[in-house]
Length: 253
Image 1 (tube, rainbow, N blue to C red):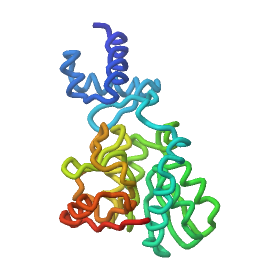
Image 2: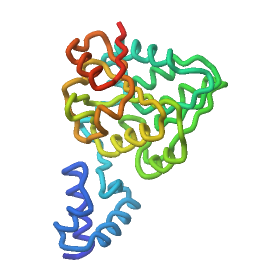
Image 3: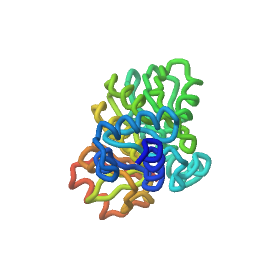
């Protein structure tokens, strides 16, 4: 098979499956993993896919990813209440990381103008915080996902690795009591996992609609979370099970 033909088929496979590993591509095309890595590097430079840890992910708009404008109005009342509760545990002088969720954007809107350092991969969060003179904002940079208005990819991951923060505030698409936390694609999941790794305290902000669901890519187990802020519609049994896993649960009205 010609090199150009192999690379064309690699892009087709990545877009079809959303993500694929180097080892799998090596077996499919009967070439070395090093050859596949060179293919992926070339295809990324041509903006045909995006490399990730051990593989590649599609950069085509994922139809499972809801647009930011739509997410802003979905469960907005619950998200605002959750954000207000999150702001109450942020102290002057804190260094925090905010993900690209709409709940994190609500946190940015609610934050008072006080001495604070905020690391984020969200354009919306950065713009909101730019209005507050005492808050220092650091953007990860990276590859832009237009649907979520967020930066992801190797550059964003390397950027996060340079910092340490007191608290990480993030959301996700799915919360499963046995299978843990998940998100819609691998690049988002990897970034959120790294956000938790650089933080002393990990706070998950989710409305009750996220419970019992699993999205495409795994972020990590529930044990990776210290605190969870949820709305009052969450099942009492679920709350009890979370507390049994040593996760502090804050319920907002």
